[in-house]
Length: 357
Image 1: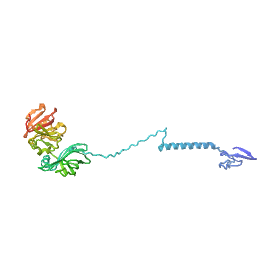
Image 2: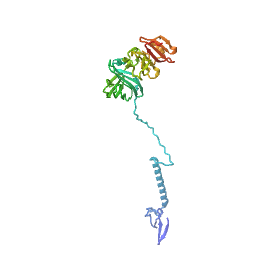
Image 3: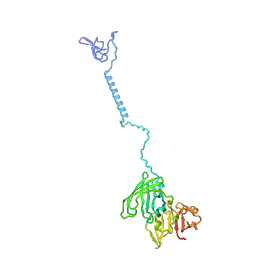
C-alpha cells in the first residue's frame, strides 16, 4: 500500500483500482475492495490488477471471437475465399427420368393382303369387293394401297396408291388427291388384332365420276394373301376380266412386235395377245427387289423357295436344265419355267401358253 501526506493528511492508494483514499479507509469506495481486515486490523494483501492489460486482453479475445464467427459463417453458409477450397458432398439420389414412352407396336405383322371378311382376292376382283395391300412398314410408318371394285359386270375400280401414314396408338390418318375418278378426300386406318378398319371420306366429289373410294370397311387378312398365278387360271383368260388381281400398272403397256401388249407391274409383267386380249404369259421376277417374296407364287412355290422345294412340289421336270439354272414343267394350261441362282434359290419364273424351248 502506498502512502503520502497531502496538506497534513496522510493518504493511501487502493491497490485494486489505484484511487487515492484517506489513510483510515478500510475499503475503496470506488471499487468496493476491502483494504483492512476488520477482525485483525491488518492490511489485506490484494493483488493489484492491471486495467490496461486486462482491457487489451479483452479486446484481443473479442477480435478472435469475431474472426472465428466470420470464418464459421463463411464456411457454413457458402461464403467463398480465394484460399479456401470447399468440397461438395454428393448425396446419392435416384434420378427419376420422366420420359413419355412411345410404345411403338410391331405393325410389320400387318404386311400383306387384306379383304372383306366374307371375301378373298379372287372374289373381290371378279365379283366386286375391297382389297387393302399393306406394302411396307418402317417403324410406325405404314405404306399401303387400297382398291375398291364395284360388282360385276361393270367392275369399276377406285384406287388410292402408295399412301403413307404415321400410326399413333394404332391409328393413322391420311389424305388422297385422286381415287382414279378425280375424287379427293381424307381417310383413317385403324389396326387391331386380326382386323384392319379403313374409312375413306370423299370431301371433293367429281360430279361426273361414276365410282369413288368412299366408305367404311372392316377387313381381315386374306388366307390366300399370295396371288397364285396357276390356281387363278390366268393363262388364256381375258385380260380385262382379271387385270384387277395384278394391282396397279407401273407404266404404260408396251406393244411388242405388233403382236403382244406387255403390261408392267411391280416385280411382274403380263403379256397379252393384241388381237384377242387373252393373256399369253406371266413373268414373275423376285430378283428385281420390287416384289415381296411371298406376294406372288405358283401354287406353294414363291420367292422363298429353292430348287428342292420346287422338286418336292412338282416332281420331275419335263426339261431339266439345272446345269444352266432352269427347269420346265408341263401344266394343264401351259408351261412354267423356273430359274435359279448359283445357290439354287428361285429368282423368277415364266408361265406361258406355249412351250418356249
